[in-house]
Image (cartoon, rainbow, N blue to C red; front, side, top):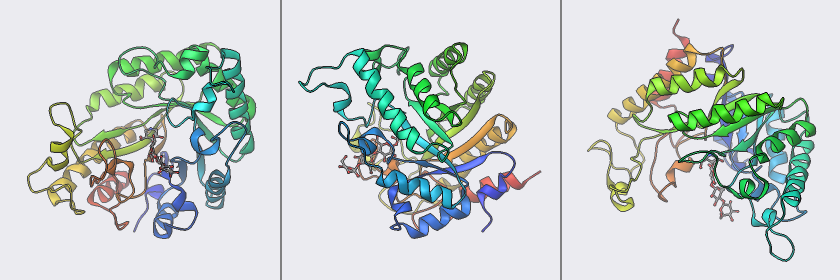
Amino acid sequence: IPTLKEAFEGKFLLGTALHVDHTNGVRKQSADLVEQQYNSIVAENCMKPEEIHPSKGVYNFKEADQFVEYGEKNNMFIVGHTLVWHSQVPDWFFLDDEGNTVSREQLIERMRDHIHTVVGRYKGRVQAWDVVNEAIDDKEGLRKSKWHQIIGEDFIELAFQFAHEADPDAELYYNDYSLILPHRRAEAVKLVKNLIDKGIRVDGIGMQAHYGIDYVKIPEFEKSITDFASLGVKVMLTELDISVLPFPTEEISAEISQKYALVPEFDPYTSTLPDSMQAKLAQNYVDLFKVLLKYQEKIGRVTFWGVNDAHTWRNNWPIEGRTDHPLLFDRNNQPKKAYHAVLELANSP
Ligand code: G3I
């Protein structure tokens, strides 16, 4: 089969998130697919503080080392994910030996140590880092994370500074979700502009892109790309997947939504997606990629959040054990209609 990375050659990088089972030999067939299709990888979990720095002074680099070696062996653009996030960060970061909340100075020191150690270890080998992840609040302003509460708003610029000190050649990104929503888009512009105005190195904005069928309003998607690009930074889709299942809202309770499907013939407990849904998914991907191609000079990379439908996080969130089909490859690593549609679009003049 033709490959994504070839089809988008000269336009932007095509990437995927890797699970440890891709680099330790367990998911061999998926790893073959990764090598064939993608020229960039990002660590799905193994570089998060919880995994790489589980307790004070204890670093666990085994899986991250494997991830980086895999990328090097395959000449891939390697992205580290993520240095400062409110989630998957162990409590010890924020507590002193007596169990009290650490001071601003102590937390800055811990952050500096963490970033210098992790980024420093892979200096010159990991080309880019998601430095700060999801710092924007869902309602307004910045999220009141422990980082924010203890250090203050400047935790963001400090994180970027430390990362730049640790590897002056690495690209540094701000990464967040739902950046097509007007208030979140505006907040991201403000945040990155503030860094730029202060002379702090920031190379790009990552739009996570965890979407759902018919969720994206294309003009909003387009506006985010152009607004971000006008700051002079790279724009990337960093965590792309399109769920075919309804998001459980308050009206649709979790239980009902597990059974409810967008088309009547689709049973979300089965592992085959009906043709009508395959076509819908393909169309949704085509709509996004049309915009990405239109702005290809501004787009640095498009990365899928996972390799195939069997192991996507969307099977387990926000409800455990659903059967989702958000990616371009099915549970047997076979290309779906969406895959062919995206390729055809890339190859059409
Ligand atoms: O392997 C561990 C095990 O050691 C641990 O003891 C146990 C209990 O937690 O489960 C296993 O860890 C799970 C891990 O995935 C590895 O499979 C975690 O519970 C589980 O929470 C974790 O989920 C990840 C999630 O981030 C955590 O927030 C997903 O795989 C990962 O896809 C997801 O990725 C995030 C991005 O980093 C940021 N943007 C949103 C995106 C989706 O949530």
